[in-house]
Amino acid sequence: MNNYNLPSPNLEPSKIEAITTTESPLLILAGPGSGKTLTIVERVLYLLVEKLVASSEILVATFTGMLIHGQSDFMISYIDPESHTLRHYFPDFLIKKKDGSYSIVEIKGDNRLDDPVVSAKKEYARSLAMLNNMTYDVVPGSEALRGYWA
Image (cartoon, rainbow, N blue to C red; front, side, top):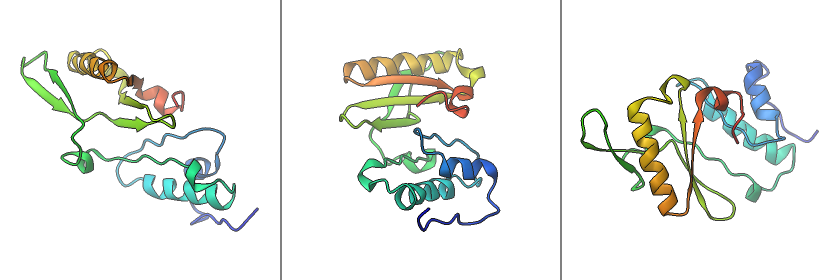
């Protein structure tokens, strides 16, 4: 071991696991005020100090809908199937891959996957992605929580 110490020995086991598991990419989904930012920062420190990973090899993507709202020009427009009006939304993630390509990723609750509005958003997002040489993925929430998507 090098010089890394957990910020608190009283962290929940799930946070310690998120910080110290390094064999694969990690997606952290949790509610407001649950310690996501602390966990992500500590994981980066753990990778740098304990695992001696070069900072150029670490990619951290965090977001909050309220933060990105109005801070990005990238949005998806679609026709709402219920109101028949043009609407816009920001996708959950716009990921720049190591090869320079982009991927749009949406995480949707399992009970909403077949929702007409979600289906309309998927249709327009897929078209946008295809026209711009991007990929588009919808990940059911249950899969994201279990880490089945990376």
